[in-house]
Length: 507
Image (cartoon, rainbow, N blue to C red; front, side, top):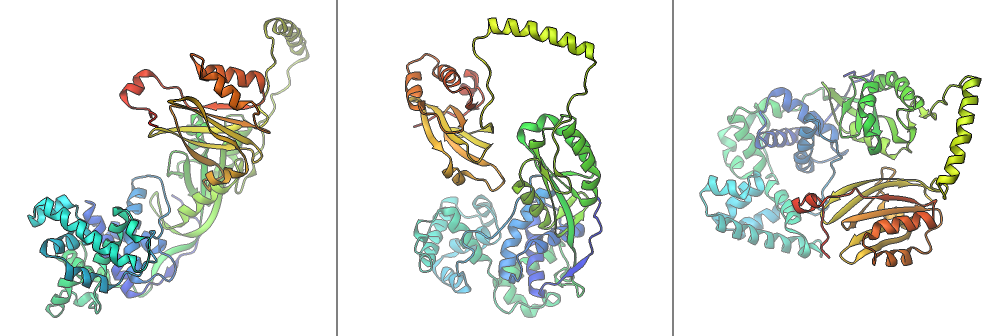
């Protein structure tokens, strides 16, 4: 992977932040079954440190390190890249007094739940095996801890009493992992002088166990005096392909070249230099008619990151993907708006004469054979349907002035679930230039029109009395409103329904 011409800069971190992140990253790698090799630890730590918000403190940095390490591992596996931010309770004023209060309230079983389950990250089943404590006692103790923390949190947020168990668990994990004050310097952490502190401080206790287990060395906890090397002006491009263009995915991959890294079903990232080289190939696909220009978009951004082989570390990858998804379709940075396909080359005159004669004959036959002309939709809509529980998730893109109607087949037959949607469509915006809405029903239909369908209610009501209501409804709509675009969910078979591989409606 080409790294481009970006300069390398040193980003400095406070010694405590460096040590806290190193300990949490190494611990998370170990708990996920990853061998903590020096190169792996270095890359994971670089990714976490580069992705941290500005001026973050050591405690919040350690808290974010968990989810950022998980995201690093997903990048190493070639999975989709996503942005990791603060949780919903990041502003909650958790402090050591909360843990002192919990430690005062819990019995030895509760202490094991607090330290092993919420602190070290073991599952309740693993705690049962490790501590040889009955599972029912552990679950009862966990429920008591949740109730206690709900009460503590309610003093700062009056809605905490109604928080889900998973949200409360994230708060308890923060409490259980808060370090004690007065942590020793890294090189003295194994000293007998600090043994008592390490026994009660989650951060130092974890560091001691990692060092004694050979996962890290004390020197790994010492921040380098020259800072950490990042490219703060790394230039990265992202290309996004429309789902409807997946049939030409291989052609797009060949056009992008071997340096492009797939980070999702329809997303690639590559360096600026590789993007400049691939630009001519992308244009050739579009002008040659292989790739519709409104099925591709891309962006070139500058940000913080570092290439490690074919894996891009740091936040610049997320910035590039989000910027690409915010671009209009047919717009790719460095390429401008993509051109329309080239017209077909002109034929010889004699072939035009033959074609004209054949056209006249075909026209005469067509007039006799067909009674209705074909119309193009006034406002075409592009939509994809994803089967989810009890319905469909529709992702679509249409003209801003288009009126959207959505009809679904429920237990009561065809039903209008969304009527005349235009201005309110913003509620469905994904932030990526398109829209997404969940619709319950075994079959759903999305209709796009220029000014709405006045008789839609009557047509839907009439269709319920027909043996194949949606076929009749489609026929009526196309006859009465020929310029309306009709897009339906994929057909499903009886075998699929019996196998449970498509959603069923439960109203």
